[in-house]
Image (cartoon, rainbow, N blue to C red; front, side, top):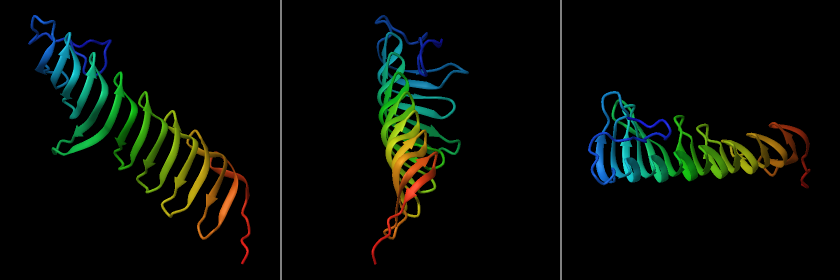
Length: 200
């Protein structure tokens, strides 16, 4: 029987429970229509400590648990119907959500490594995008926000301020070949700029 007040993986066991109050190490396969299988440590009939859980949808988590929730260090993966295993996230969790430092692998091939809070990129991190541009800097609520550097695939770069995922604020754009544009941006649009003329 699942407990709706807990996160993914929280179970009140109705089989293999012993006189110790459901503590210890054991394996549980969920009944038909359930969520798969859990093998690891328990405390009072909840996943607690190190354990591995897999679901019928091919999702799997291996790592630390606390009172039925992913909490501590662990990794999430997905197994496709052809048997291939794809990493989704490796890092820290808090109360069933990505929180702390971790690495996320996206379906389009992009990768983020850095800080998380409540399943969102927040703090400092680096994101390698599928189209080969790279952002290194600060994040807020899953968006580029604060100071950072955005590298284009062609080698050009913007260094400056970001707000809600856009270049916004003071910064400079390096066009290459010693051509640097200083200016102020609003939602990715340069509103005013100065390009110094280099002496020949």
